[in-house]
Length: 319
Image (cartoon, rainbow, N blue to C red; front, top):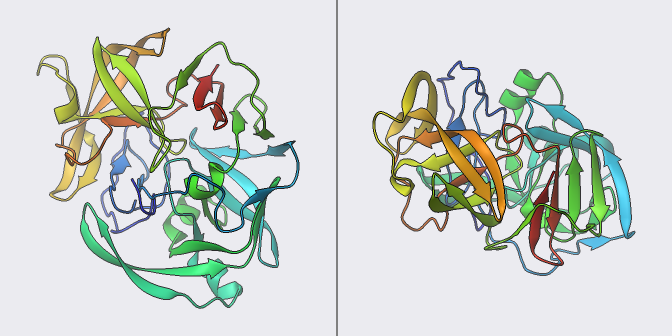
């Protein structure tokens, strides 16, 4: 998902209904994109190439700070931000997206002019617009200036029932360690305490991945706070037809159109921790061989109550 990580590219007019919801996300991810509908709302995955060092003037103002968030659809973490001269802007925190994006409405409100770009996605080349945002602040993080994409978030706004100013992606988030505490509904920015359950990041750029075991098979998963559960590509995991159950109402958007998503129960482990038997989604599609990952790791359906991104030590932790 990268050189810009999650961006959207096509209007999805088919929305499945199933008890497994991936939740809302912008509809396209740029470059190595995958749009997932584990049901009700389109999910978007797009991957960018964040810099290993704070870029675009991103800096931290304090060693630790807690910021409250709202949780939508069990997977969307939404915080308040200051963007330019506009306060209390609802922003989605999304580790599976880069570069960050703002809504068309907010871009118009800030009277910012951008430039047209052509980006390569799984669905082909799309036209989008980027601009230089003069200032953005989320908790202790500040960026001035920073390049962002402009996205139409109206579909998500209607589905969620709130106004959205944009998406804070990995290009901003990876500039400092942070923890998402789902019990307290707080994002804690700053140094990460040692976690009993932790696994090393296999890659930190252009995206975050970790190794996992599913039914004794090793896979590399993209760590994605905007994804609801655990999903792998069909050609990255050996299964039998008897194991997988397909749901005609659950679908994924692919270059060839809408493709079904199947489910099966499997033993899952992260690092040395056995997570027990979990429901795993199988995307009935062969992923791009250039994708250096086999699927996506979300948090809500995994039962994680707290997740941490320790960039100083290169660790992903959970409780």
